[in-house]
Image (cartoon, rainbow, N blue to C red; front, side, top):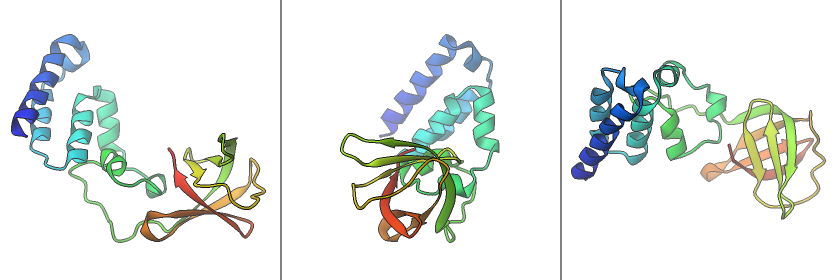
Length: 165
């Protein structure tokens, strides 16, 4: 596996000559070398993404802390990509609910609704169920359930949803 890391690091270093913005960054090779020591696949990929990002984007990712409501519904490797490796995270109190307004609605070919919320999150129904009288501008609450499930609540009507974006 270390051979793979070394090969990947060498490939990224060769791109320095191709991309002038990366060539100006003196500590790029150090950041890439630090990424090769990460054992968790998702965190290693996130580290390489941050190392190879243009300087302005890398500063924004490292400096900006992600709002807990923006992480609501994000799980696994996607969550690891959004986190800074050196930052301590409070895993003991993840949010249990989130309220937002519906900014846009779409319908998938099988009838499932896709909800775009005013905070930029996109949620989709897992399956078509009972009638859900939702329209743009309605306030909805998304509740975290057991085993990573989520429910969207609107006027005492509930549907199972999953975060798409």
